[in-house]
Amino acid sequence: MTALTRWIRRNLVIIAGLGTLAYLILPNVVVLVFSFNKPNGRFNYEWQRFSTDAWTDPCGVADLCGSLSLSLKIAIWATIGATVLGTMISFALARYRFRARPAVNSLIFLPMAMPEVVMAASLATLFLNMGVDFGFWTILIAHIMFCLSFVVTAVKARVMSMDPRLEQAAQDLYASPVQTFLRVTLPIAAPGIAAGALLSFALSFDDFIITNFNAGSTVTFPMFVWGSAQRGTPVQINVIGTAMFAVAVLCVLVGQLAGARRKRS
Amino acid sequence: MSATATPEAPPAVEGEKKPPLIKPAVRKRLVPYWLLLPGILWLLIFFAAPLIYQASTSVQTGSLEEGFKVTWHFQTYWDALTEYYPHFLRSVLYSATATVLCLLLGYPLAYLIAFRAGRWRNLVMILVIAPFFTSFLIRTLAWKTILADSGPVVGALNSLHILDVTSYLGITEGQRVLATPLAVVCGLTYNFLPFMILPLYTSLERIDPRLHEAAGDLYARPFTIFRKVTFPLSMPGVVAGTLLTFIPAAGDYINAELLGSTDQKMIGNVIQSQFLRVLDYPTAAALSFILMAAILTMVTVYIRKSGTEDLV
Image (cartoon, rainbow over all chains, first blue to last red; front, top):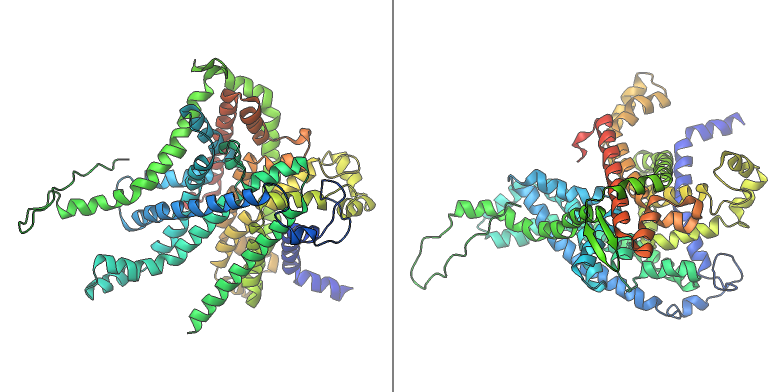
């Protein structure tokens, strides 16, 4: 017994950490398991019996795949928009000293420190009073707005830690400014830009609160899930959730392997 | 923004070299402003301007049919506060509890990844981030299954008579966990836990492990090392993590809606229903302004107290 308690005490951090990890992953396991359920009735909260129906027919529910492709489309455009605008801002902030810098920094910081519901309601108030029709464009505008700060933070960190002498070296070797940017600066900043883009994609794809206020009658995937929580959740939602998880893990693993190989060669 | 527009240089005629209208030095000084312009305009138009607009909406009166007018009707703020202060208190209480729980749960995991995971570090890191990619709402709905009345969690808590204690404390009701404060706090903790773990990990990872060895050489016990060396050095992570958890949790209405009942409504739920269902825009605006002001005040005080002002 004393040996056991001693072992527990020595490994307390590991035990507690793994406990937290289990807490984090538990819902994903539930989503996976319940994607093979065949529920009685509309709600999929209780296990009935095993079935692969939902997996063979993931688009079998009305509007589900439509909302999914709309969310994908918005996420892709929001990522492109936020990444381009955000990268430009972060280069300005990381490379230049100018008077408006503190003001710009706080303008970048504020959207991240603001509860989403406040941003959502105020943007919707503006659209409402300008008589803008809610839909694809209002959602896209809102998504680019809140993803921007995250891109700036990710890219800025990378550009700041970059050695400016690399660019000087390129110019000493008679590279034109464009060549220097494309062959030296951009490749070094790329991981930061990629991180920012990935983050915007995930944030945009998953956003519910801001979209809920600015979508009108347009239904994105999170809004479909929200609506279905009241009307009855189809099993297909769990299928999509599991697929998203699998795709994400695969992407990360491929990225890790590619990184490891590049390091070796 | 003070980015002044530069007059376009006239098109240079072939063969004739005109002196540039703008000196290269000036042009170089304008580069950052051109880089900033599109993004900052976007934020000014779609983030800052709406907030100002929201401020004017909050002092308007009127109805949807007759239209709203600015009448400097500050009464809306007072009415909103007196009517919805329980929701404000509940939001602060729930999100503060969730933040503390996130810190307690997240610290060991961040510590594990930073110091003890060894070659498993990348795998554990992936397992922390990957759940993010299954939709937020789908994962929250999964908690409905986990905490279901006839589910294993409720069964276990019941047979250990824990639910009797928690019901007595008012965290749960009767024999159920769903639709009680416990379920909402559990959902909030779960959803914002990664926001705690990542900054904690970043600051823990920067700590030189030799400091631990030095403390050990000086006969400090493991807990003393943690209290005197590790924890103080991880303070930037603790501050960033608690802010990243508390702020979104205080404005959240998804957990309260999906896992709670009408008795667990938070201020986010009120703003949402005032705006999208009741269509009472002035009240919704006033409520979001009060929420914003409260959070900004709390955050400022907190940052001052914790002494990490370089965070912003």
